[in-house]
View 1 (cartoon, rainbow, N blue to C red):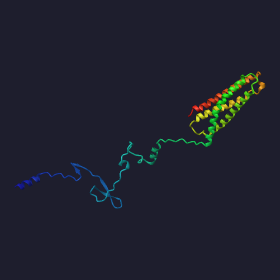
View 2 (cartoon, rainbow, N blue to C red):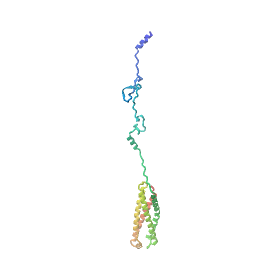
View 3 (tube, one colour):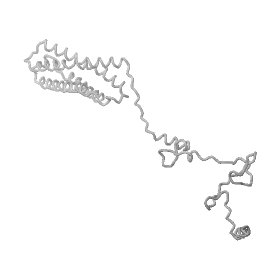
Amino acid sequence: MVVAIVAVILALAPAPHSRDADSTYGHHLSLPKVVKADSSGVPTPDADRVGISNADPVVSPLPSSAARPSAGFTTGLSITDAPVGAANLLADTTPRHVRPKAVEYSDFYYTRLKIHQIGSYAILPLFLAEALIGQKLISTAPPPSDGLKTAHGVMAGAIGVIFVVNTITGGWNWWDSRNSPEGKTRRTVHSILMLVADAGFLATAMSAPEGDHQHGLTGYGSSAQTHRALAYGSITLATASTVMMWLWKK
């Protein structure tokens, strides 16, 4: 009797829903299909679910940029992932510092510089002595003493020799250092001032009174004043240019 009742209950009970092997909690999950390939590498038309096929699936590798994140770029690409042209463009944006070309000077350059410096120091006391002697020649009653005239000529000759030597050594060194940017402005200004002083001393020598026979004559005073004015102007310009080189180092 009990067996008959159980059999009736089982017959009337609804059949249970069968759950697929690939479903979870009532939701059907579709597993990815892979294409099977034969031994020659050609894909076969049929496809099975993962785990069922006996053939090895052909899986396409992910790109390197998608496989790993790249820090520092919002695009997700690094310089190594970018094309060769783009990588070169990024590399070209790096700032470059160009070192200035060094200028080499010969030993003769420094020899000329030393001679030039010695002449610059030696000429300053000569300027002072020549100015004092020249003033005495103008203010002394005629005729002037032979000692004053000789001293004036010696001082003028010494100044002339030093100016010629310094003009040659200074101009030569200025030309050799023309490609050096350091101190170029002060060297150029000094050279121009000394050339103007050269022209002034030449004019001073040409305007000098010619001898004792003119001393005390009507035109002597005017000629002497012009000579003295040119001398003082040239001395002042040359001294200022020399002191400028001492104070202006760069």
